[in-house]
Image 1: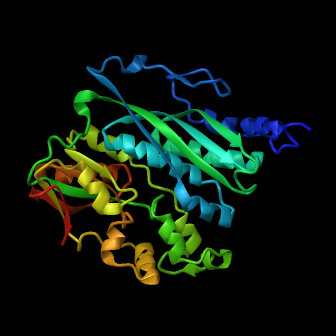
Image 2: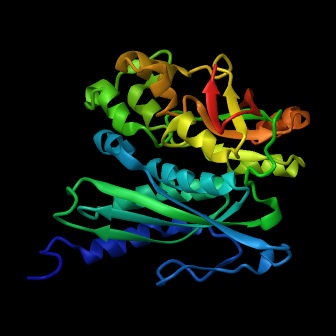
Image 3: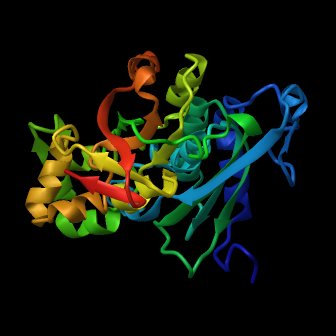
Length: 341
């Protein structure tokens, strides 16, 4: 009896690491110390010592049950982008610059080519957000996961000068809410998505004219990464007073997280037009409108509050980062929370 007979193939692990090296190396920033394969990742903070109060930010998350679609469609090259996005968007939401990322893949059986494909997506997400993939773990766990399934999670660490953190403390009545469009469902609400649509390959391979692709392709569209958009706003000299990353819980759970007491967010329902994919989900699943806004991002991945005088400059800066944005509401006096009218 040996480890391989027990279900853990050490040689497959070595091969996976070798295959993923080129993807990991493509993310390397000058601050990274050492290379892949060490017991820990090292990152120098020397270049940030000019900050008055350098402050580390962190975010951790997984991809959730969106992975079930990746298994079913046997498509694993973009799911890593989702994992990075869920973490770095939280860091950017607080005004931070993501510095590095680490991933964790747990699988029933280590197929080196599949693991390398997943990491390729992680590296792409890191490149999109300007951070380095400095480490990770692939755990082969036979008997715990089915052989053809895996879980994917990770975390990111970023940095910001404390005085430039987006905390919501400067939020005030009259601020305008700007929404940055999402790329789709992102990585939240898939437990409901999997109830709305048949989880069958032939069903997911159905082409929809309104979507311009198959249903499966639309649902697997990776989560949008907003790091460059937030950086562009900052470089334009705009002060973001509050920011919310629209993840699980949709508008009703996430927008209040950026508010302070006495501030009510009023959302213009006519401004937030449901993209075709969300319309299809609502119709197919017979989902109540309130439940849509309480579960999904409904086409808005990030919400910002800025002074009214900065609206045009903010939208222009977002467009410079190749993202789309629009005015979706305002801040008024009232009990902390949101109303959608």
